[in-house]
Image (cartoon, rainbow, N blue to C red; front, side, top):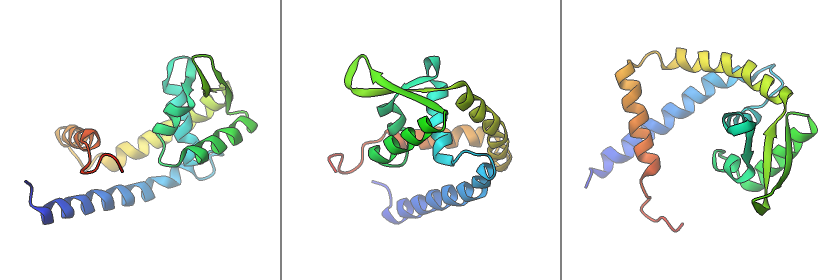
Length: 149
């Protein structure tokens, strides 16, 4: 078993690094007309086939609750960024599709945001970036100590 103190110190370092980097790059959304949450919705939707994703898949990629994602998507529908319709394969679900305006807004911000991320991460070598991706993927896939909570 890993040393508990080392595990806690590593977790705190990971958490603080994520928080500090996130704060630094959050200004990418200033004066863009999109919030970071809206960008995250469009990220999931524009990556999907036909720019369409199930609402539950959008929710799974967000760090906010399902009701909050639903309200956010409804506001985005009102702004013309996405459309929402019933999922023909799941009577209780919905499909969210990026409109041309939503996809254009996403691409515009994604270019600048991607450059900002790349610049911030340039402190790491390609090997370190690969290792970081592998380690974080491993952490995300590992079952927690109490998977039922």
